[in-house]
Image 1: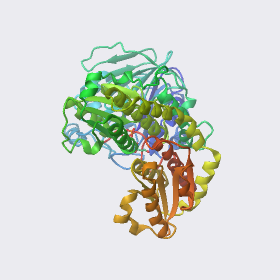
Image 2: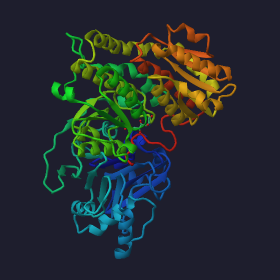
Image 3: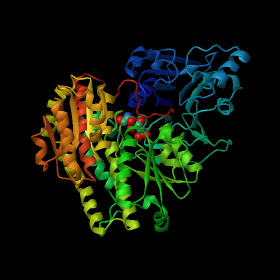
Image 4: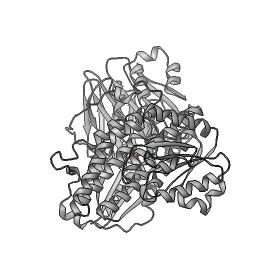
Length: 612
Ligand code: AGP
Protein backbone atom coordinates (compact mmCIF):
# COMPACT_ATOMS: atom_id res chain seq x y z
CA UNK A 1 0.00 0.00 0.00
CA UNK A 2 2.51 2.60 1.14
CA UNK A 3 6.05 2.85 -0.19
CA UNK A 4 9.17 2.68 1.96
CA UNK A 5 12.80 3.49 1.13
CA UNK A 6 15.83 3.54 3.43
CA UNK A 7 19.45 4.34 2.66
CA UNK A 8 22.70 4.32 4.58
CA UNK A 9 26.02 4.86 2.83
CA UNK A 10 28.44 7.46 1.56
CA UNK A 11 26.28 9.41 -0.88
CA UNK A 12 23.71 12.13 -0.38
CA UNK A 13 20.71 10.31 1.08
CA UNK A 14 18.11 12.94 0.14
CA UNK A 15 18.21 12.41 -3.64
CA UNK A 16 18.48 8.61 -3.23
CA UNK A 17 15.35 8.57 -1.09
CA UNK A 18 13.41 10.96 -3.33
CA UNK A 19 14.23 8.99 -6.49
CA UNK A 20 13.33 5.74 -4.74
CA UNK A 21 10.02 7.18 -3.53
CA UNK A 22 9.15 8.34 -7.04
CA UNK A 23 9.53 4.75 -8.23
CA UNK A 24 7.12 3.66 -5.50
CA UNK A 25 4.46 6.32 -5.89
CA UNK A 26 2.13 3.73 -7.38
CA UNK A 27 1.96 2.12 -3.93
CA UNK A 28 0.52 5.23 -2.33
CA UNK A 29 0.58 8.84 -3.31
CA UNK A 30 -1.37 11.07 -1.01
CA UNK A 31 1.54 12.32 1.08
CA UNK A 32 5.25 11.68 1.46
CA UNK A 33 8.13 12.36 3.79
CA UNK A 34 11.76 11.71 4.67
CA UNK A 35 13.84 11.71 7.86
CA UNK A 36 17.56 12.38 7.51
CA UNK A 37 20.34 11.81 10.05
CA UNK A 38 22.11 15.13 10.57
CA UNK A 39 24.85 15.55 13.19
CA UNK A 40 23.08 13.66 15.94
CA UNK A 41 19.62 14.87 15.01
CA UNK A 42 16.88 13.43 12.83
CA UNK A 43 15.40 16.05 10.54
CA UNK A 44 11.92 15.20 9.30
CA UNK A 45 10.39 16.82 6.22
CA UNK A 46 6.94 15.74 5.11
CA UNK A 47 4.08 17.05 3.02
CA UNK A 48 0.63 16.16 1.79
CA UNK A 49 0.65 15.59 -1.96
CA UNK A 50 3.14 14.01 -4.32
CA UNK A 51 6.82 13.18 -3.90
CA UNK A 52 7.56 16.13 -6.22
CA UNK A 53 5.96 18.42 -3.59
CA UNK A 54 8.15 16.88 -0.92
CA UNK A 55 11.24 17.35 -3.07
CA UNK A 56 10.50 21.08 -3.37
CA UNK A 57 10.26 21.48 0.38
CA UNK A 58 13.45 19.55 1.16
CA UNK A 59 16.11 21.87 2.55
CA UNK A 60 19.29 21.94 0.38
CA UNK A 61 21.58 21.41 3.37
CA UNK A 62 19.68 18.32 4.47
CA UNK A 63 20.08 16.80 1.05
CA UNK A 64 23.81 16.39 1.89
CA UNK A 65 23.48 13.85 4.72
CA UNK A 66 24.20 10.19 4.06
CA UNK A 67 21.50 8.17 5.86
CA UNK A 68 17.75 8.40 6.09
CA UNK A 69 14.34 6.88 5.54
CA UNK A 70 11.43 7.88 3.31
CA UNK A 71 7.78 7.02 2.80
CA UNK A 72 4.93 7.60 0.38
CA UNK A 73 1.51 7.11 1.96
CA UNK A 74 -1.92 5.76 1.06
CA UNK A 75 -4.20 6.87 3.85
CA UNK A 76 -5.91 4.31 6.10
CA UNK A 77 -6.10 5.98 9.55
CA UNK A 78 -6.60 9.72 9.22
CA UNK A 79 -6.80 11.86 6.07
CA UNK A 80 -3.78 12.72 3.88
CA UNK A 81 -2.30 15.68 5.77
CA UNK A 82 1.23 16.85 6.63
CA UNK A 83 0.82 15.59 10.20
CA UNK A 84 -0.44 12.17 9.19
CA UNK A 85 2.35 11.70 6.64
CA UNK A 86 5.32 9.50 7.61
CA UNK A 87 8.01 9.43 9.01
CA UNK A 88 6.56 9.64 12.50
CA UNK A 89 8.74 10.84 15.37
CA UNK A 90 8.78 9.82 19.02
CA UNK A 91 8.08 12.31 21.81
CA UNK A 92 11.73 13.35 22.11
CA UNK A 93 12.31 13.25 18.35
CA UNK A 94 15.10 10.71 18.85
CA UNK A 95 13.29 7.89 17.09
CA UNK A 96 11.67 8.04 13.66
CA UNK A 97 9.75 5.32 11.82
CA UNK A 98 8.18 4.66 8.46
CA UNK A 99 5.55 1.97 8.41
CA UNK A 100 3.39 0.06 5.96
CA UNK A 101 0.56 -2.09 7.31
CA UNK A 102 -1.99 -1.75 10.09
CA UNK A 103 -1.41 -1.68 13.84
CA UNK A 104 -4.61 -3.28 15.12
CA UNK A 105 -4.02 -2.60 18.85
CA UNK A 106 -2.84 0.98 18.39
CA UNK A 107 -5.62 2.46 20.49
CA UNK A 108 -4.72 0.34 23.53
CA UNK A 109 -1.02 1.12 23.10
CA UNK A 110 -1.68 4.81 22.58
CA UNK A 111 -3.71 4.99 25.80
CA UNK A 112 -1.01 3.13 27.73
CA UNK A 113 1.84 5.28 26.41
CA UNK A 114 -0.12 8.43 27.14
CA UNK A 115 -0.93 7.35 30.70
CA UNK A 116 2.37 5.67 31.62
CA UNK A 117 4.86 7.88 29.82
CA UNK A 118 2.90 11.05 29.21
CA UNK A 119 3.64 10.90 25.47
CA UNK A 120 1.67 13.28 23.29
CA UNK A 121 0.47 12.09 19.91
CA UNK A 122 0.46 14.46 16.95
CA UNK A 123 -1.29 12.46 14.23
CA UNK A 124 -4.43 10.39 13.77
CA UNK A 125 -2.47 7.44 12.41
CA UNK A 126 -1.99 4.00 13.87
CA UNK A 127 1.68 4.13 12.79
CA UNK A 128 2.74 6.94 15.13
CA UNK A 129 2.37 4.62 18.09
CA UNK A 130 5.37 2.65 16.77
CA UNK A 131 7.75 5.60 17.19
CA UNK A 132 6.60 6.20 20.76
CA UNK A 133 6.64 2.53 21.67
CA UNK A 134 10.18 2.07 20.33
CA UNK A 135 11.33 5.10 22.31
CA UNK A 136 9.63 3.66 25.40
CA UNK A 137 11.57 0.39 24.88
CA UNK A 138 14.89 2.07 23.98
CA UNK A 139 17.88 1.45 26.27
CA UNK A 140 20.75 2.32 23.95
CA UNK A 141 20.25 -0.34 21.25
CA UNK A 142 17.74 0.33 18.47
CA UNK A 143 17.52 -3.31 17.38
CA UNK A 144 16.65 -4.44 20.91
CA UNK A 145 14.07 -1.66 21.22
CA UNK A 146 12.41 -2.53 17.91
CA UNK A 147 12.30 -6.22 18.87
CA UNK A 148 10.74 -5.44 22.23
CA UNK A 149 8.23 -3.04 20.66
CA UNK A 150 7.20 -5.45 17.92
CA UNK A 151 6.48 -8.16 20.48
CA UNK A 152 3.60 -5.95 21.66
CA UNK A 153 2.19 -5.24 18.22
CA UNK A 154 -0.91 -6.91 16.81
CA UNK A 155 -1.29 -6.35 13.09
CA UNK A 156 0.95 -6.10 10.08
CA UNK A 157 4.07 -4.10 9.45
CA UNK A 158 6.96 -3.36 7.20
CA UNK A 159 8.89 -0.97 9.38
CA UNK A 160 12.15 0.93 9.16
CA UNK A 161 13.32 2.82 12.25
CA UNK A 162 16.23 5.17 12.94
CA UNK A 163 17.60 6.63 16.17
CA UNK A 164 19.42 9.96 16.40
CA UNK A 165 21.82 8.27 18.84
CA UNK A 166 22.85 5.66 16.24
CA UNK A 167 23.81 7.54 13.08
CA UNK A 168 24.06 5.48 9.88
CA UNK A 169 22.09 2.59 11.40
CA UNK A 170 18.65 1.54 10.16
CA UNK A 171 16.59 -1.21 11.78
CA UNK A 172 13.90 -3.02 9.82
CA UNK A 173 11.12 -5.41 10.82
CA UNK A 174 8.58 -7.28 8.78
CA UNK A 175 5.28 -9.03 9.37
CA UNK A 176 2.70 -9.50 6.58
CA UNK A 177 3.93 -6.56 4.52
CA UNK A 178 6.83 -6.74 2.05
CA UNK A 179 10.30 -5.41 2.76
CA UNK A 180 13.35 -5.96 0.57
CA UNK A 181 16.98 -5.34 1.42
CA UNK A 182 19.37 -4.11 -1.30
CA UNK A 183 23.10 -4.82 -1.07
CA UNK A 184 25.55 -2.13 -2.26
CA UNK A 185 29.29 -1.43 -1.89
CA UNK A 186 29.87 0.72 1.19
CA UNK A 187 26.14 1.52 1.13
CA UNK A 188 22.96 -0.44 1.70
CA UNK A 189 19.28 -0.02 0.98
CA UNK A 190 15.86 -1.16 2.06
CA UNK A 191 12.57 -0.70 0.22
CA UNK A 192 9.05 -2.02 0.11
CA UNK A 193 9.44 -2.92 -3.57
CA UNK A 194 12.20 -3.68 -6.04
CA UNK A 195 11.78 -0.70 -8.48
CA UNK A 196 13.10 1.61 -5.74
CA UNK A 197 16.34 -0.37 -5.58
CA UNK A 198 17.07 -1.09 -9.23
CA UNK A 199 18.92 2.14 -10.02
CA UNK A 200 21.47 1.15 -7.37
CA UNK A 201 21.66 -2.60 -7.02
CA UNK A 202 20.32 -5.88 -8.33
CA UNK A 203 21.46 -7.86 -5.29
CA UNK A 204 18.49 -8.16 -2.98
CA UNK A 205 17.08 -10.22 -0.18
CA UNK A 206 13.38 -10.56 0.63
CA UNK A 207 12.74 -10.40 4.37
CA UNK A 208 10.42 -13.04 5.79
CA UNK A 209 7.74 -12.55 8.41
CA UNK A 210 9.13 -12.19 11.91
CA UNK A 211 12.60 -11.16 10.73
CA UNK A 212 14.60 -8.09 11.73
CA UNK A 213 17.44 -6.48 9.82
CA UNK A 214 20.14 -3.98 10.74
CA UNK A 215 21.71 -1.92 7.98
CA UNK A 216 24.89 0.14 8.20
CA UNK A 217 26.99 1.30 5.22
CA UNK A 218 29.36 -1.64 5.69
CA UNK A 219 27.06 -4.51 6.51
CA UNK A 220 23.62 -6.04 6.68
CA UNK A 221 22.60 -8.36 9.47
CA UNK A 222 19.32 -10.26 9.36
CA UNK A 223 17.89 -12.01 12.42
CA UNK A 224 14.98 -14.40 12.92
CA UNK A 225 12.35 -13.84 15.56
CA UNK A 226 14.46 -15.67 18.16
CA UNK A 227 17.38 -13.34 17.60
CA UNK A 228 19.57 -15.79 15.64
CA UNK A 229 21.56 -14.26 12.81
CA UNK A 230 20.54 -15.71 9.42
CA UNK A 231 22.52 -16.43 6.30
CA UNK A 232 19.89 -15.58 3.70
CA UNK A 233 20.03 -16.18 -0.03
CA UNK A 234 20.66 -13.23 -2.30
CA UNK A 235 18.07 -12.79 -5.04
CA UNK A 236 19.61 -11.37 -8.22
CA UNK A 237 17.06 -9.21 -10.09
CA UNK A 238 17.17 -9.82 -13.83
CA UNK A 239 14.57 -7.34 -15.10
CA UNK A 240 15.34 -3.74 -16.01
CA UNK A 241 14.34 -0.48 -14.42
CA UNK A 242 13.17 0.49 -17.89
CA UNK A 243 10.69 -2.36 -17.72
CA UNK A 244 9.15 -0.59 -14.74
CA UNK A 245 8.95 2.77 -16.50
CA UNK A 246 6.60 4.18 -19.13
CA UNK A 247 8.66 3.43 -22.24
CA UNK A 248 7.32 6.31 -24.35
CA UNK A 249 3.61 5.91 -23.55
CA UNK A 250 1.62 8.65 -21.85
CA UNK A 251 0.57 6.34 -19.07
CA UNK A 252 1.68 3.07 -17.54
CA UNK A 253 -1.78 1.69 -18.19
CA UNK A 254 -1.51 2.13 -21.96
CA UNK A 255 2.01 0.71 -21.96
CA UNK A 256 0.79 -2.30 -20.01
CA UNK A 257 -2.18 -2.82 -22.34
CA UNK A 258 0.24 -2.77 -25.28
CA UNK A 259 2.53 -5.26 -23.54
CA UNK A 260 -0.18 -7.91 -23.43
CA UNK A 261 0.95 -9.91 -26.48
CA UNK A 262 4.45 -10.26 -25.00
CA UNK A 263 3.10 -10.93 -21.52
CA UNK A 264 0.89 -13.78 -22.75
CA UNK A 265 3.85 -15.23 -24.65
CA UNK A 266 5.80 -15.27 -21.39
CA UNK A 267 2.97 -16.95 -19.49
CA UNK A 268 2.85 -19.70 -22.11
CA UNK A 269 6.60 -20.13 -22.40
CA UNK A 270 7.86 -23.53 -21.35
CA UNK A 271 4.42 -24.68 -20.28
CA UNK A 272 3.59 -26.47 -23.51
CA UNK A 273 5.63 -29.53 -24.46
CA UNK A 274 7.19 -29.06 -27.90
CA UNK A 275 6.91 -32.71 -28.98
CA UNK A 276 3.41 -33.63 -27.81
CA UNK A 277 1.80 -30.17 -27.74
CA UNK A 278 0.46 -31.06 -24.27
CA UNK A 279 0.32 -28.69 -21.35
CA UNK A 280 3.07 -29.39 -18.83
CA UNK A 281 2.71 -27.78 -15.40
CA UNK A 282 5.50 -29.10 -13.21
CA UNK A 283 4.83 -26.26 -10.79
CA UNK A 284 1.47 -27.78 -9.83
CA UNK A 285 3.35 -30.72 -8.35
CA UNK A 286 0.20 -32.84 -8.06
CA UNK A 287 0.32 -36.58 -8.74
CA UNK A 288 -2.15 -38.11 -11.18
CA UNK A 289 -3.80 -39.79 -8.21
CA UNK A 290 -4.22 -36.48 -6.40
CA UNK A 291 -5.68 -34.89 -9.52
CA UNK A 292 -8.11 -37.76 -10.02
CA UNK A 293 -9.26 -37.45 -6.41
CA UNK A 294 -9.91 -33.70 -6.65
CA UNK A 295 -13.63 -33.17 -6.17
CA UNK A 296 -13.81 -29.45 -5.45
CA UNK A 297 -11.73 -26.37 -6.17
CA UNK A 298 -12.09 -22.99 -4.49
CA UNK A 299 -10.80 -19.91 -6.26
CA UNK A 300 -10.16 -16.96 -3.95
CA UNK A 301 -9.28 -13.46 -5.18
CA UNK A 302 -10.26 -9.78 -5.21
CA UNK A 303 -11.29 -7.28 -7.88
CA UNK A 304 -9.89 -7.99 -11.30
CA UNK A 305 -8.27 -11.21 -10.11
CA UNK A 306 -11.71 -12.35 -8.93
CA UNK A 307 -13.08 -11.70 -12.42
CA UNK A 308 -10.30 -13.86 -13.83
CA UNK A 309 -11.34 -16.53 -11.33
CA UNK A 310 -14.93 -16.50 -12.66
CA UNK A 311 -13.60 -17.39 -16.10
CA UNK A 312 -11.24 -19.96 -14.57
CA UNK A 313 -14.27 -21.62 -12.96
CA UNK A 314 -16.06 -22.00 -16.28
CA UNK A 315 -12.91 -23.32 -17.97
CA UNK A 316 -12.05 -25.84 -15.23
CA UNK A 317 -15.61 -27.11 -14.91
CA UNK A 318 -15.95 -27.48 -18.67
CA UNK A 319 -12.54 -28.99 -19.45
CA UNK A 320 -11.72 -30.93 -16.28
CA UNK A 321 -15.18 -31.65 -14.88
CA UNK A 322 -14.30 -30.47 -11.36
CA UNK A 323 -16.82 -28.27 -9.53
CA UNK A 324 -15.34 -24.85 -8.76
CA UNK A 325 -16.53 -22.15 -6.40
CA UNK A 326 -15.19 -18.63 -6.80
CA UNK A 327 -15.15 -16.33 -3.80
CA UNK A 328 -14.37 -12.69 -3.30
CA UNK A 329 -11.60 -13.13 -0.73
CA UNK A 330 -13.08 -10.68 1.78
CA UNK A 331 -16.27 -12.77 1.88
CA UNK A 332 -14.68 -16.23 1.76
CA UNK A 333 -13.43 -16.21 5.34
CA UNK A 334 -16.72 -15.14 6.84
CA UNK A 335 -19.11 -17.52 5.11
CA UNK A 336 -17.88 -20.82 6.61
CA UNK A 337 -17.23 -22.64 3.33
CA UNK A 338 -17.30 -26.43 3.53
CA UNK A 339 -13.58 -27.00 3.19
CA UNK A 340 -12.06 -30.50 3.14
CA UNK A 341 -8.39 -31.51 2.91
CA UNK A 342 -8.76 -33.28 -0.46
CA UNK A 343 -9.87 -30.04 -2.12
CA UNK A 344 -7.60 -27.52 -3.83
CA UNK A 345 -7.60 -23.77 -3.28
CA UNK A 346 -6.36 -21.47 -6.02
CA UNK A 347 -5.56 -17.93 -4.92
CA UNK A 348 -5.06 -15.32 -7.63
CA UNK A 349 -3.25 -12.07 -6.91
CA UNK A 350 -1.20 -9.87 -9.21
CA UNK A 351 0.71 -8.26 -6.35
CA UNK A 352 0.74 -11.30 -4.12
CA UNK A 353 0.26 -8.96 -1.16
CA UNK A 354 -3.51 -8.43 -1.04
CA UNK A 355 -4.51 -8.78 2.61
CA UNK A 356 -7.94 -10.33 1.96
CA UNK A 357 -6.51 -12.89 -0.46
CA UNK A 358 -3.75 -13.77 1.99
CA UNK A 359 -6.31 -14.27 4.72
CA UNK A 360 -8.25 -16.63 2.42
CA UNK A 361 -5.05 -18.52 1.66
CA UNK A 362 -4.30 -18.92 5.36
CA UNK A 363 -7.83 -20.07 6.10
CA UNK A 364 -7.63 -22.71 3.36
CA UNK A 365 -4.33 -23.87 4.90
CA UNK A 366 -5.79 -24.19 8.36
CA UNK A 367 -8.45 -26.52 6.92
CA UNK A 368 -5.77 -28.68 5.32
CA UNK A 369 -6.25 -27.66 1.66
CA UNK A 370 -3.27 -27.43 -0.65
CA UNK A 371 -3.01 -23.92 -2.07
CA UNK A 372 -1.89 -23.01 -5.57
CA UNK A 373 -1.03 -19.33 -6.02
CA UNK A 374 -1.29 -17.61 -9.38
CA UNK A 375 0.68 -14.41 -8.99
CA UNK A 376 2.91 -12.01 -10.86
CA UNK A 377 5.34 -11.03 -8.14
CA UNK A 378 8.24 -13.26 -7.30
CA UNK A 379 8.97 -13.36 -3.59
CA UNK A 380 5.55 -11.90 -2.72
CA UNK A 381 3.91 -13.10 0.46
CA UNK A 382 1.29 -15.12 -1.41
CA UNK A 383 3.99 -16.85 -3.43
CA UNK A 384 5.89 -17.76 -0.31
CA UNK A 385 2.95 -18.99 1.73
CA UNK A 386 1.25 -21.06 -0.96
CA UNK A 387 2.18 -24.72 -1.44
CA UNK A 388 2.62 -24.25 -5.17
CA UNK A 389 3.13 -21.14 -7.27
CA UNK A 390 2.39 -20.46 -10.88
CA UNK A 391 3.92 -17.15 -11.91
CA UNK A 392 2.20 -15.21 -14.67
CA UNK A 393 5.48 -13.55 -15.76
CA UNK A 394 3.68 -10.42 -16.99
CA UNK A 395 6.48 -8.11 -15.83
CA UNK A 396 5.90 -5.29 -13.35
CA UNK A 397 2.43 -3.77 -13.49
CA UNK A 398 2.53 -0.21 -12.24
CA UNK A 399 -0.85 1.31 -13.19
CA UNK A 400 -3.40 0.78 -10.45
CA UNK A 401 -5.82 -0.56 -13.07
CA UNK A 402 -4.81 -4.13 -13.75
CA UNK A 403 -4.64 -5.12 -17.44
CA UNK A 404 -1.77 -7.37 -18.47
CA UNK A 405 -1.92 -9.11 -15.11
CA UNK A 406 -5.56 -10.01 -15.83
CA UNK A 407 -5.01 -11.51 -19.28
CA UNK A 408 -2.04 -13.50 -18.03
CA UNK A 409 -4.11 -14.75 -15.11
CA UNK A 410 -6.68 -15.96 -17.64
CA UNK A 411 -4.00 -17.74 -19.64
CA UNK A 412 -2.61 -19.34 -16.48
CA UNK A 413 -6.10 -20.55 -15.55
CA UNK A 414 -6.65 -22.01 -19.04
CA UNK A 415 -3.35 -23.87 -18.70
CA UNK A 416 -4.47 -25.27 -15.35
CA UNK A 417 -7.87 -26.27 -16.78
CA UNK A 418 -6.35 -27.99 -19.80
CA UNK A 419 -3.71 -29.72 -17.68
CA UNK A 420 -6.32 -31.03 -15.22
CA UNK A 421 -8.56 -32.10 -18.12
CA UNK A 422 -5.67 -33.91 -19.85
CA UNK A 423 -4.72 -35.72 -16.66
CA UNK A 424 -8.28 -36.69 -15.71
CA UNK A 425 -9.09 -37.79 -19.24
CA UNK A 426 -12.08 -35.44 -19.45
CA UNK A 427 -10.51 -33.53 -22.33
CA UNK A 428 -10.03 -35.48 -25.55
CA UNK A 429 -6.55 -35.12 -27.09
CA UNK A 430 -7.90 -33.41 -30.25
CA UNK A 431 -9.79 -30.85 -28.16
CA UNK A 432 -6.77 -30.28 -25.94
CA UNK A 433 -4.63 -29.84 -29.07
CA UNK A 434 -7.06 -27.31 -30.55
CA UNK A 435 -7.11 -25.32 -27.30
CA UNK A 436 -3.31 -25.34 -27.08
CA UNK A 437 -3.14 -24.10 -30.69
CA UNK A 438 -5.66 -21.43 -29.75
CA UNK A 439 -3.53 -20.36 -26.78
CA UNK A 440 -0.39 -20.18 -28.92
CA UNK A 441 -2.22 -17.96 -31.42
CA UNK A 442 -3.27 -15.45 -28.75
CA UNK A 443 -0.15 -13.22 -28.74
CA UNK A 444 -0.46 -12.59 -32.48
CA UNK A 445 -4.22 -12.06 -32.21
CA UNK A 446 -3.74 -9.62 -29.34
CA UNK A 447 -1.38 -7.63 -31.56
CA UNK A 448 -4.13 -7.44 -34.21
CA UNK A 449 -6.66 -6.34 -31.59
CA UNK A 450 -4.32 -3.52 -30.59
CA UNK A 451 -4.03 -2.11 -34.13
CA UNK A 452 -4.20 1.63 -34.77
CA UNK A 453 -7.51 1.29 -36.63
CA UNK A 454 -9.09 -0.51 -33.71
CA UNK A 455 -7.83 2.13 -31.30
CA UNK A 456 -9.34 4.83 -33.53
CA UNK A 457 -12.71 3.04 -33.30
CA UNK A 458 -12.50 3.05 -29.52
CA UNK A 459 -11.49 6.70 -29.33
CA UNK A 460 -14.44 7.71 -31.50
CA UNK A 461 -16.88 5.84 -29.22
CA UNK A 462 -15.24 7.31 -26.12
CA UNK A 463 -16.04 10.83 -27.30
CA UNK A 464 -19.68 9.87 -26.76
CA UNK A 465 -19.17 7.71 -23.67
CA UNK A 466 -17.05 10.25 -21.81
CA UNK A 467 -19.97 12.70 -21.76
CA UNK A 468 -22.15 10.22 -19.82
CA UNK A 469 -22.08 9.40 -16.12
CA UNK A 470 -23.57 5.93 -16.45
CA UNK A 471 -22.96 2.93 -18.68
CA UNK A 472 -23.91 -0.73 -18.96
CA UNK A 473 -21.71 -3.67 -19.90
CA UNK A 474 -23.69 -6.72 -20.98
CA UNK A 475 -22.76 -10.25 -21.97
CA UNK A 476 -23.79 -13.88 -21.59
CA UNK A 477 -21.84 -16.92 -20.45
CA UNK A 478 -18.08 -16.23 -20.62
CA UNK A 479 -18.84 -12.71 -21.84
CA UNK A 480 -20.55 -11.89 -18.54
CA UNK A 481 -17.41 -11.94 -16.34
CA UNK A 482 -15.66 -9.96 -19.10
CA UNK A 483 -18.48 -7.41 -18.84
CA UNK A 484 -17.89 -7.29 -15.06
CA UNK A 485 -14.21 -6.64 -15.63
CA UNK A 486 -14.99 -3.93 -18.24
CA UNK A 487 -17.37 -2.18 -15.84
CA UNK A 488 -14.85 -2.29 -12.98
CA UNK A 489 -12.13 -0.82 -15.18
CA UNK A 490 -14.36 1.99 -16.46
CA UNK A 491 -15.50 3.10 -13.02
CA UNK A 492 -12.03 2.69 -11.51
CA UNK A 493 -10.26 5.13 -13.81
CA UNK A 494 -12.89 7.30 -15.54
CA UNK A 495 -15.27 7.59 -12.55
CA UNK A 496 -18.19 6.84 -14.87
CA UNK A 497 -20.62 4.65 -12.99
CA UNK A 498 -20.74 1.35 -14.85
CA UNK A 499 -22.78 -1.74 -14.17
CA UNK A 500 -22.28 -5.20 -15.60
CA UNK A 501 -25.42 -7.11 -16.34
CA UNK A 502 -25.93 -10.65 -17.59
CA UNK A 503 -27.50 -9.75 -20.94
CA UNK A 504 -30.52 -11.95 -20.28
CA UNK A 505 -31.15 -10.20 -16.96
CA UNK A 506 -31.56 -6.72 -18.46
CA UNK A 507 -35.27 -7.16 -18.97
CA UNK A 508 -35.72 -8.15 -15.30
CA UNK A 509 -35.01 -4.63 -14.05
CA UNK A 510 -31.89 -2.81 -15.24
CA UNK A 511 -33.50 -2.07 -18.63
CA UNK A 512 -35.51 0.65 -16.89
CA UNK A 513 -32.32 2.74 -16.86
CA UNK A 514 -31.71 2.56 -20.61
CA UNK A 515 -32.63 5.78 -22.36
CA UNK A 516 -31.81 7.53 -25.64
CA UNK A 517 -28.03 7.61 -26.14
CA UNK A 518 -27.05 5.66 -23.00
CA UNK A 519 -23.76 3.84 -23.60
CA UNK A 520 -24.15 0.05 -23.56
CA UNK A 521 -21.06 -2.03 -24.26
CA UNK A 522 -22.21 -5.45 -25.43
CA UNK A 523 -19.85 -8.42 -25.42
CA UNK A 524 -20.97 -10.79 -28.17
CA UNK A 525 -18.11 -13.25 -28.64
CA UNK A 526 -19.84 -16.52 -27.73
CA UNK A 527 -20.85 -18.36 -30.89
CA UNK A 528 -22.98 -20.93 -29.09
CA UNK A 529 -25.40 -18.28 -27.78
CA UNK A 530 -24.92 -15.49 -30.31
CA UNK A 531 -28.61 -15.35 -31.24
CA UNK A 532 -29.63 -14.92 -27.63
CA UNK A 533 -27.13 -12.08 -27.14
CA UNK A 534 -28.35 -10.42 -30.33
CA UNK A 535 -31.92 -10.45 -29.04
CA UNK A 536 -30.76 -8.73 -25.87
CA UNK A 537 -28.90 -6.12 -27.94
CA UNK A 538 -32.07 -5.46 -29.92
CA UNK A 539 -33.98 -4.81 -26.74
CA UNK A 540 -31.42 -2.09 -25.90
CA UNK A 541 -31.56 -0.69 -29.44
CA UNK A 542 -35.31 -0.40 -29.20
CA UNK A 543 -34.88 1.94 -26.18
CA UNK A 544 -32.34 4.14 -27.99
CA UNK A 545 -29.21 2.82 -26.18
CA UNK A 546 -25.90 3.53 -27.97
CA UNK A 547 -24.54 0.00 -28.33
CA UNK A 548 -20.85 -0.64 -28.82
CA UNK A 549 -20.50 -4.33 -29.67
CA UNK A 550 -17.34 -6.34 -29.13
CA UNK A 551 -17.72 -9.32 -31.40
CA UNK A 552 -15.91 -11.66 -33.81
CA UNK A 553 -15.08 -10.51 -37.32
CA UNK A 554 -16.99 -13.48 -38.77
CA UNK A 555 -20.23 -12.74 -36.88
CA UNK A 556 -21.71 -10.69 -39.71
CA UNK A 557 -25.16 -10.39 -38.19
CA UNK A 558 -23.94 -8.14 -35.41
CA UNK A 559 -22.70 -5.22 -37.49
CA UNK A 560 -26.05 -4.04 -38.86
CA UNK A 561 -27.67 -4.08 -35.43
CA UNK A 562 -25.39 -1.76 -33.49
CA UNK A 563 -24.05 1.79 -33.53
CA UNK A 564 -20.34 0.90 -33.24
CA UNK A 565 -18.53 -2.38 -33.61
CA UNK A 566 -15.18 -3.75 -32.57
CA UNK A 567 -14.20 -6.90 -34.45
CA UNK A 568 -11.96 -9.52 -32.89
CA UNK A 569 -10.07 -12.16 -34.87
CA UNK A 570 -11.75 -15.58 -34.96
CA UNK A 571 -11.25 -17.28 -31.61
CA UNK A 572 -13.05 -20.19 -29.95
CA UNK A 573 -15.71 -19.39 -27.33
CA UNK A 574 -13.55 -20.68 -24.46
CA UNK A 575 -10.56 -18.42 -25.15
CA UNK A 576 -12.53 -15.39 -26.38
CA UNK A 577 -12.30 -13.50 -23.03
CA UNK A 578 -8.55 -12.96 -23.54
CA UNK A 579 -9.26 -10.93 -26.68
CA UNK A 580 -12.69 -9.58 -25.69
CA UNK A 581 -11.43 -7.82 -22.58
CA UNK A 582 -8.90 -5.70 -24.48
CA UNK A 583 -11.40 -3.28 -26.10
CA UNK A 584 -13.00 -2.79 -22.67
CA UNK A 585 -9.59 -1.85 -21.23
CA UNK A 586 -9.08 0.63 -24.07
CA UNK A 587 -12.58 2.04 -23.59
CA UNK A 588 -11.80 2.68 -19.91
CA UNK A 589 -8.43 4.19 -20.78
CA UNK A 590 -9.63 6.59 -23.50
CA UNK A 591 -12.76 7.59 -21.57
CA UNK A 592 -10.55 8.43 -18.58
CA UNK A 593 -8.15 10.42 -20.77
CA UNK A 594 -11.08 12.29 -22.37
CA UNK A 595 -12.38 13.18 -18.90
CA UNK A 596 -8.93 14.37 -17.76
CA UNK A 597 -8.66 11.75 -15.02
CA UNK A 598 -5.50 10.60 -13.30
CA UNK A 599 -5.29 7.36 -15.25
CA UNK A 600 -2.46 5.54 -13.49
CA UNK A 601 -3.35 6.67 -10.00
CA UNK A 602 -7.12 6.90 -9.69
CA UNK A 603 -8.46 8.68 -6.63
CA UNK A 604 -8.95 6.66 -3.43
CA UNK A 605 -7.25 3.54 -4.79
CA UNK A 606 -3.87 1.88 -4.45
CA UNK A 607 -2.03 -0.77 -6.40
CA UNK A 608 -1.38 -3.14 -3.59
CA UNK A 609 -4.17 -3.40 -1.05
CA UNK A 610 -2.51 -4.68 2.10
CA UNK A 611 -5.34 -3.84 4.48
CA UNK A 612 -8.55 -5.80 4.98
C1 AGP B 1 -7.88 -3.82 -10.76
O1 AGP B 1 -7.87 -2.90 -11.79
C2 AGP B 1 -7.91 -3.29 -9.42
N1 AGP B 1 -6.96 -2.28 -9.19
C3 AGP B 1 -8.12 -4.26 -8.26
O2 AGP B 1 -9.41 -4.77 -8.41
C4 AGP B 1 -7.13 -5.44 -8.07
O3 AGP B 1 -7.27 -6.37 -9.10
C5 AGP B 1 -7.42 -6.09 -6.70
O4 AGP B 1 -7.15 -5.15 -5.69
C6 AGP B 1 -6.60 -7.34 -6.45
O5 AGP B 1 -5.24 -7.09 -6.46
P1 AGP B 1 -4.19 -8.26 -6.57
O6 AGP B 1 -4.38 -8.94 -7.87
O7 AGP B 1 -2.85 -7.59 -6.45
O8 AGP B 1 -4.47 -9.19 -5.42
